[in-house]
Image (cartoon, rainbow, N blue to C red; front, side):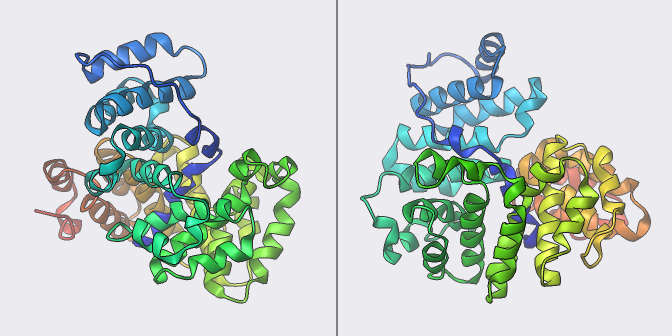
Amino acid sequence: MKKYTIVFLLVFFGTFYVMRTKFPTPRVETAKSPDQFVAEMQKTCTTNKAVCYNRFLYKIAIEKGYDLAYRTLLALQKKDSEALQCHLFAHTIGKGVFNHDPKSWKNVLAHATSACSYGVGHGLIESYSLTLKPEALRTSAVLLDICKNQPSNCTHVLGHSIILEYKGDLDQSISQCAIFNKSEREYCYNGVFMEYAYPETLVEHGYVNKSLLILPPRLPELASLCNGFKDTVVSTECWGEMVHPLFDTYKQNYQKAFDFCGTAHTLQASSKCIDGLVGGIIVAKNFDLQGTRSICTLKARRSNFEDTCYAILVSTSLTYLPSQHGPKAVEFCNSLEDQFKRNCFQTVAIKLTSNIKKQDAEAICASIPKEYRSSCIAI
């Protein structure tokens, strides 16, 4: 099921600008609890809530560290459903935690939550990358050291940093990703292509023209680019990052977006594009599993599409918020036709082994019907 984990990375949609914003760092009162911070945030953040919430979370993280900042985010999610799409907020926490104690960032990374699509880790890694000497990211030893003993998707963040290092030069960036092993290399490629497809940070740095942020006119060129790679792995990862351009072009006409994915030269690339779209749609729908399930009955050039589609919806939801979404995921799987239940419940079980506290996982596992429960942990 690891192939499903890549889809949650699309939460980077348009977020890199905010990710790199230098938030002010006034001191935070130490006696406040997460609930007290949330009350203050909701009182203060009446407009531009996402930016305002980020300022608060950054202040807490830089003053008090990871634990209080992340517990505040969890408390905020209970009060405001807009905070459920939390990759950006977690990324900001990671950035603040790094600046709280730059020497211990790898230790924090080793113990930080993987929820919110690994947002805390992304913030930590990106912040460290920005402290390196000029052209350091062109050195293989430096890149390998950053992601040593870290999850494979560490290199996704480096992919974003690498293409910035090469000022948007796609060929050089792809070549640099080749130093990693197969799994890490794929994550690096999709980080490069994500930045290339929606080059907000490249525009911010003045490396490319801002007209490239207008995505619909670029869609044919991007498809031609992806189909033009002789390396099928590179081509597949390129198609996997077509999500943002497809959303901007086809809006909520998901059938047309799926059809466009089908123009990929290989079934593998078409599948990667479609899987990315499914993950993006459930995020855009605020993880409404029942309200989104109808997309799985559309036509798509992908083997076992309907079965896989339901699993991706669940996988993406649990990658963001396993504890909150776990019971809903079980309910969703139970509502499917029998032929789709096994894969759906197996996806729940796999995500629960890595993204949640054991006692919470056990409670959710216990609610799964016995005939599908064998793959769930500690049952």
